Amino acid sequence: MAKRIPWVTVALTYLAFVCWAYVRSAVGQIAPGSKNAAPDEIHVRVDEVRILFHAADSHGLTVTDLKPEELELFDEEKGPGHILAIQPLATQPLSLGFLIDVSESMATYAGRNRLLASLLAQELLTRPDDSAVVISFGKLSQVIQPWSNQQKIVLAAFEQVISGRNVAKEGTAIYDALFNTCHYQFGEQGTASKRRVLLLFSDGEDTASYVSLRDAVDACQAVHTVVYAVAPKPVSGAISTGPIALKELTEGTGGRVIEADEPEIERKSEIHRLVKDLRHEYELFYRPKDLKHDGKFHRIVLLGPNRVSSIDAQSGYYAPAR
Image (tube, rainbow, N blue to C red):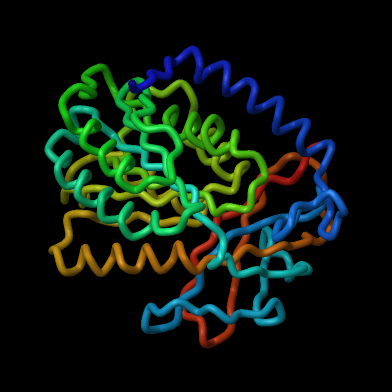
């Protein structure tokens, strides 16, 4: 049975997250090569930054053989810092969160969202260690299907999302749903070597959240979760904060917005590209120059060699606080 997540839980979780983030940054983590590290897992020290990114050439094809010496990372417009290592993630399993907006503004897109979510699940849940959680939200969030590695079970959960039993008319709390999913679902997975991806189906219009957009981005960055948004094409001339919010959210975590109103052939091409991106990510470990432990947000720019036409990476990171 679906579980509701009330706003009180969101508020308490937010406070817990702030305390957790402070302690985590103050204490630090196990350094690379530590005896306590799990196989195939790299832990980041307090003065190092972990960044997920995807690289493509001028034809949109994934570049899979990058080396650290080919990359430059600019931190707050300062000169390149020291890139310690990059690691392809093609062999690591996926943890997928399907976060589906069932508020009134998305009612006409319910069938399309079900179709796209099903296509993505069929393409991505292909390995025994891949898993997914399905959550719907309006003002409150509902866990429709807890974590499962069974593709059939996940596909069946999408039917419940659009069945009419989960329609919400009291507002839309997108940021609360994002915050709760990243912190409460992905955060409880611990340090397992999985790529964490959140697929958000929404127009980005938030009317009822307790937390802010910045809080939601912070929570997802803290657990290294990349957010992709599948959204309706913005209406020309309409006044809406949704597209801007989705752009900030996805760029802040290393994902992007996919417009689902494109013709079928273009939509299928975009989904194919998304699947390739998720199967061929890199993680980069970087030591900033003159890092100050002030808890401030640092914007970054990651540049590649001439053979790389585009790089999708998170927009920055928070320095650890003392």
